[in-house]
Length: 402
Image (cartoon, rainbow, N blue to C red; front, top):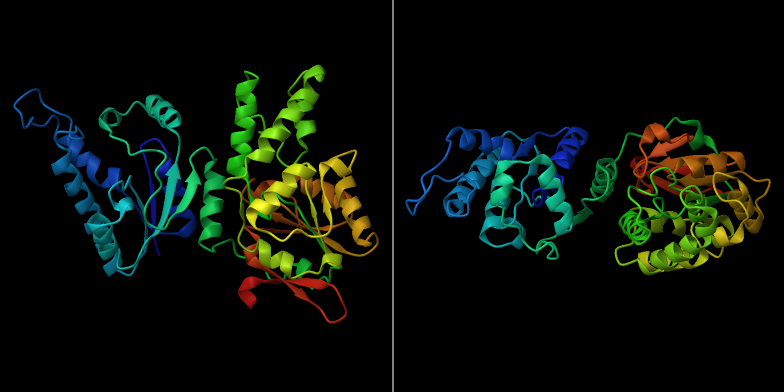
């Protein structure tokens, strides 16, 4: 497997590339690591126009330096190809992502069409990150438009996400995940119904959620990540811990308005549609901390078929980690006393599910696996099949087993 991690300087591609290489157990080929030590060792270079000596990344030298640097990267990649080993490549790949001759040369060196991960960020974020690291080469960078995505097929990842969230998104897109122990007790159980959290479980709304809460923070003059300790909990509970009591209702109305409109890049996660389709409407429910409006808009934006039973924050008096949402879901399905299985990505949701007497599957990505106290931890629903059984209900089967 050849995976390309691309993006502008300051987008975090090196950090993600290292973690991805570690997770996939592949060599890391970083353009800067391969070429910069030699170029830095050369010192100042001659100006073609005879003026002051230039840094190797100066625009005047770029017509010579860029092709040479990428030729070195492709040569190392070709060695990996010939040895039968894949790699994770890290570079801006600005020209390559447009397609054409540069892309063709990269594909030839790889021997296969690489999987491309593109990290994108707004200009202000990139400028702030570069200023923080203070690398001399950054002063000579010429950026492509941050609004122009690659022309070739790619996975788009927001630079603002945490590295663990980025890694989880890439692994899901590649159909990769942790090894599942097929002998785990949960695989011996038969469940009457499945209750699914929405955000981070069935859909990827993290970029939209982060943008929404960042906008709220700007409007109220606040700094930091407002959701840092509150993911999986109702917005009202998160806001009550941040705002003075007299401002909570106003802030809640505003965040609902923002999040309801912010659905442009909300997508279904791999395996979500299949998991929902495996169960009848009498055996499945979505149980979310979001409001009825937000949940409805996101389900529609992701292209999922909405189950008949959807429990939202508007339906309960206490949200997760209180068990009320899942207890209500069981009641609406008529499954109060039958074994039910909850799929959740947040510690608060898992605590609520356990308190409601349910078995639990934790989905890593929004949170690290070690933070999820569940009967089974997976990287996504694509790793499981929900298999009907003759006597009624369903059981879990690791997808790798058929």
